[in-house]
Length: 201
Image 1 (tube, one colour):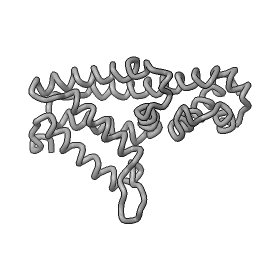
Image 2: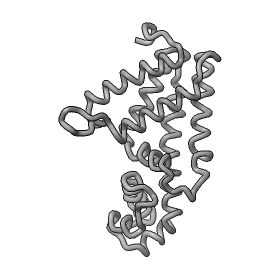
Image 3: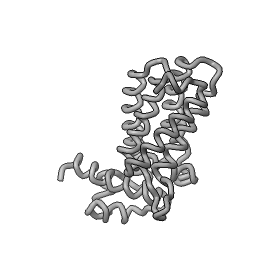
C-alpha cells in the first residue's frame, strides 16, 4: 500500500464514520478498523483524530468548491439559470450524501472545539453564490436567505428525507421523492427571489 493510497483509504473510512456518527461519536480505533488498518498506521498517514477531521472537511470543501465554481461559470442571469444552479447543488448533494451529513453534524455542535471551519469553507462559497445570483436578480430579493434556504432544505432532505405510509424515510436515493423535493425547492426559490415560474418552466 502506497502512502497516497493508504491516506485515501483512511480518509474514505473517516468520512463515512464522521458523516454517520459525527466527530464526537467517532474514535480513531473505529476509523482504523473501518479502513482495515491499525491505529499506528492511521496516525502515520494522517496524524491524530483532529488532523483527520480537518483533512476530511478540507477534502469535502474542495469537492464542493469545484462543483460550485463550474455551476456558477454556467449561470445565466434568468430564472432558468438560477434553477439550473439549484439543480446542480441538489445533484452534488445526491452524489455526495456524506457532505451534507458532515455539515448537519456541525449544525448540532459536533466538533465544537474546531470553530473556524464555517468561516474558512462556508462563507466564501456563500459569498460567491450571493454575489452571482444577486447580480442576476437585483436588489429586491433576500438572496442570502434564499441561498440558506436551499442549503437547509437540501441538507435536511438528504439526511432526514420524508416519511411515507410505509414508515420509511425516502431520501435522495428515491427517484420519486427526489423529483418531488426538486420541484418543491424550485417553487420556494422562485417565490423567494420574486421570479416568474412561467419563464423558468
